[in-house]
Image 1 (cartoon, rainbow, N blue to C red):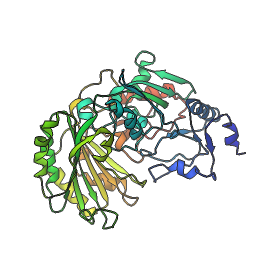
Image 2: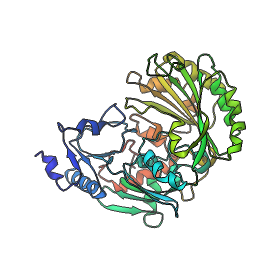
Image 3: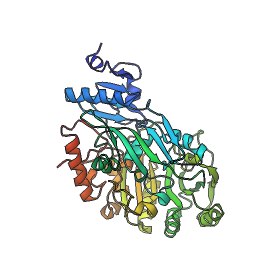
Image 4: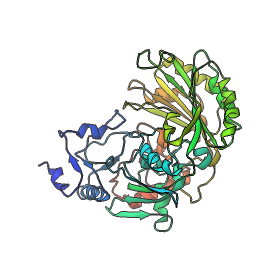
Amino acid sequence: MNDMATLLSDVDGEVLVPGDDGYDTVGTGFQLRDPHRPDAVVRATCPADVQAAVRVAAERRLPVAVQATGHGRAAGLDGGLLVATGRMDTVRVDPDRRYAEVAAGATWQQVVDATTPYGLAPLSGSFPKLGAVPYTLGGGIGLLSRRYGFAADHVRAVQVVTPDGRLRHVDPDTEPDLYWGLRGGGGNLGIATSMRIGLLPVDRIHGGALSFDAERDPHVAAGWWRWTRDLPEGMTSAYGMVPYPDLPMFPPELRGRVISRVQVCWSGPADEFASLVAPLRRLGTCLADTLRELPYRESGSVFAEPDRAHPYRSSVVLLPDLDEAGLADLHTATVATRSTVVGIRHLGGAMGRPAAVPNAVGHRDAGYLVSVLSAGESVTSAELTGLLGGWPARSLGRSLNFSFGPLTPDQVREGFDPADARRLGELRAAYDPDGLLRPNHPVPTP
């Protein structure tokens, strides 16, 4: 037996080493670029499996990373141990106290499927196959965020294995510093095995997308931006540009075009939706209109993001506001490259207010998140940043949840307010003094 497999013989879940069936698939996940290549993969089935992996890593001084669905991986682990949590996917709902216990590998679709029978919804993201727990650890900007805040703001408790191998229950009363840092600080302080998240009384929404030909209607982005400047908090929206190859797998009206798309989610009174979105329908000649009332269970159809694994990188800025000149430059550059995807999220609302119990989520004063993402491996990070023109100089910082690819220590600090970055670094040094954990974006220690 492989030496590493012997060391992990008390793990209930499967242990994979290089050459085993499934090793490559588990180490890759949704992000195909820079896959993990560890000495062993622990396909955990329970918190005890995570503890066993961490203890072996600590004894052997091996780096350890964790992966649920693999969407946010910045760089692959070379050697060490990978804890794969995809098999820890249970969701338990308490409808009376409006919370769900969500295990580390559960996707948002699994959470939504479990909560909607009770007329409740989580603060889920736009992509239903994304891991709910890692999304929330990074803050979480979702379909209901302008009305209710970041997903991390609604975390009531976390069960986490810290680098000393201890399984800790963390809430505002038991370990307040760890509770603060886990909510928004990413995976820097431990491996979360489950979360208790608050649920909201939402069972139906109004939403969907309007699609336009970006070259024929070049002013859609500016029109959307002006529309967002005076909206009630019940409206969360985004603007995107997506190049569609001329291939038969895509709808005829989209093939071979760069498509501008406005996505909206309205959780306010149903009778106000039509008048609120009417200006959007006048932005150009609409190629596709999916705006409708829908059950929250189908909320993933609002963004309708591709669910096939692929390689990608991104460059991200958080801005206090947009401007027409910057939007025009970004439009021109994106149409010219035809190989990048633009995503702009409207922030503000409840996201601009402090959480009821403070957490590490940064840059609550940002009004917009702008992301430029490569659709393959040919575009470099520098080229992506170049597409953003002068906006990086005005940036308040970055969103680490939307940062796909390695970052420098200074770039990681930009994910937080300066005092919070220092506090997180001090906590990381206290809980992981040997640098055992390899999160997607390691917070620099003092």
